[in-house]
Image (cartoon, rainbow, N blue to C red; front, side, top):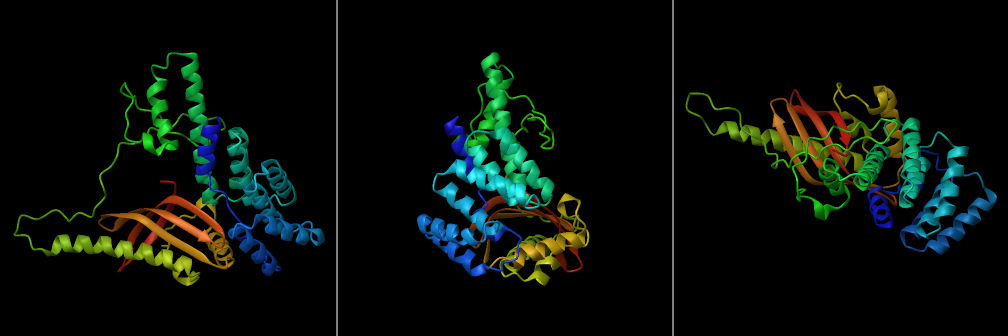
Length: 343
């Protein structure tokens, strides 16, 4: 259990510091000072400064949030759980404390509690992508536990191949290995189910996605067609990188302008509500870094799909996740119409 807990705790990224909270930064200097001490590994000094601040402002949510992170980093897990639990009681509208509670519970192997905390985070903020991704990891771990139990109770003739697939999620070294017997098709997971769902079948490895040229007509073919397709893929890549750059620079006009009118905001938010939330969260950070790795682009006519790993940093917060952007061609521009995390 400890081995599995360590892995799931590694997968669930802790939202590190108070920069993630959408709260007025009236005391930004105090927060920044403590954040810098934490980033420098001076946790004892950070703890002392946080306690000194909270002695005069005991209900301040941002400094309490930082204190919970410090407690977790210094191994005081139960104290950190108590801090974040009290934050959820005093400020139930904030999703971040629920997410951090889930990380702490998962580290202790309490995955049912982790699931409940993440569901509360998503209920508080339906567009909170980190909580959605973490919830997927928790569901996968719960499914793994269920199949382990099945193997203990039975010979596991049908459960064994599925269990091998589940293990691939938590052990990168196991990827590419196949179970001894052919694995039957597994049903898709429905994360919203109130009970631990069956794991989704891991799809077969796909070849690297490349832009393909249009079908050649019967007439002699010129070299322009494959170049056009290649240019389309490069245009999409340039659009995606410009979107990431605008996000990092907090250029809200360019960032929001990268989304088409067909874009469907997550969590059933209206477009205006989603834009308002994004402005608040992005401009509230003192520094943002958005790096894209393993970017691949697939173009099909006026539609395109870009997949990559996104490394996001805001102040002392660091989150790495898989992301997919669906784009459509509008005039001479490519615009984002769908954004998903963990795919």
